[in-house]
Amino acid sequence: MNNIRIGTLVGGNDAVRVLPQIIPHGFESFSLTFWQTTGQADLKELAKQVREIVDEKNIVISSLGIFGNLLTGEGDNADTLGSWERLIDHAELFGTNLVAGFTGRMPGSIDQSIPKFGQVFGELTKRAEDRGVKIAFENCDMGGTWESGDWNIAHNPTAWELMFNAVQSDSIGLQWEPCHQMVSLIDPIPQLRKWAERGKIFNVHGKDATIAWDVVREYGIHGPRPFVWHRTPGFGDTNWTDVITILRQNGYTGSIDIEGWHDPVYKGELEMTGQVHALNYLKNCRGGDFIPNPK
Image: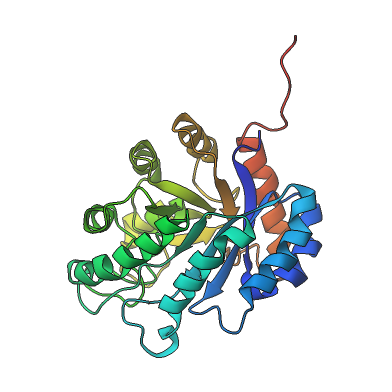
């Protein structure tokens, strides 16, 4: 049953401390993430220590993530491009072939970012292909719109079309989750079906959303009342059985990695309670325990 593994995100710099504490809960994969830079991390040594923790337990590192704006490379993002390069170069040591993150963004509309995106990720894609690595783009808008934003252009399907036309390679795809589409009032299920059929779903973040349609109908989406909340799977609106069915129908054998630390209820001291609930919920949506057929 675990040809689609259920795991969670862990900060790369905290991995050696955190992994032994949460592995007993039953996580099957981990996505190791960095914010804007890998900093002083010795990736070779980190990979060695992480592999010593996970390999004997049949747990995989599903991806490495770097989240910053490498297109501008300004301020705290000065090392983001270099971090992408280092993670691509070291991915094999972690036992993964996937590096993920934001696309970055230039000032102005998404259209205005495409030339720089094509230039930067054209080179990164060649680097990845040479090393047998794939690149996936997380679909968070980070507060941006089509007209403006500071982090990421990969939050709208029209942008995906422009991106994949600018860099035409089977080695680039999406680190997709339903939550970010639901925040934009996009139905995630037909979208997933379309992009899974095109083979562009490389990794899935386990994050859901709850949409307060009563608030939308009464106050709209620009009023003072919140109309949507990021949720841990099992507490939101998404039919994860449908998500996993669509993934399986299209030959997906990656992981669904829970992205915690967003739920408005299961937070603070309830964070891991919510994540373990999500872990077990997603395993159930996957079909539960494997039961062999009669011989």
